[in-house]
Image (cartoon, rainbow, N blue to C red; front, side, top):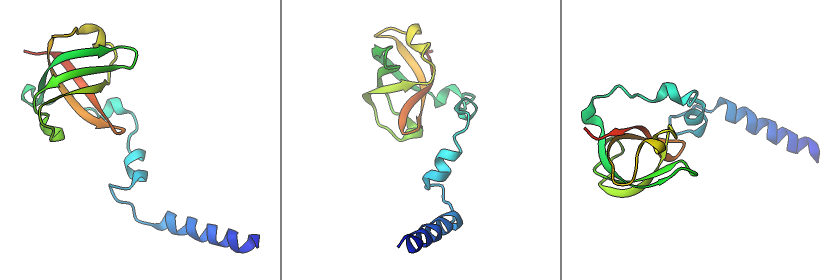
Length: 120
């Protein structure tokens, strides 16, 4: 009884190892993460930044709530929402009511601020 089960498991492992990978395959998406600090592009022009207003700061959870305009790179309309922050020091630099410029990206399934600074 154990021999056929082992043969099936070995065959399945062989097929999975030989299967072509696509960009949507989680094995590709997660294996390419590496050091996120190298993946975040902060060099884009100021025009690429979105604008917002700080509505709430949650230092314990490393989150900030912004009322924001359109976020073009995420195809997101204006709204108020909670963001993770890439750098928790940002939570000490701002207060409720501050106008900000920011860049956001989806990182590990969470919308995260990758750049945050006072609005020009």
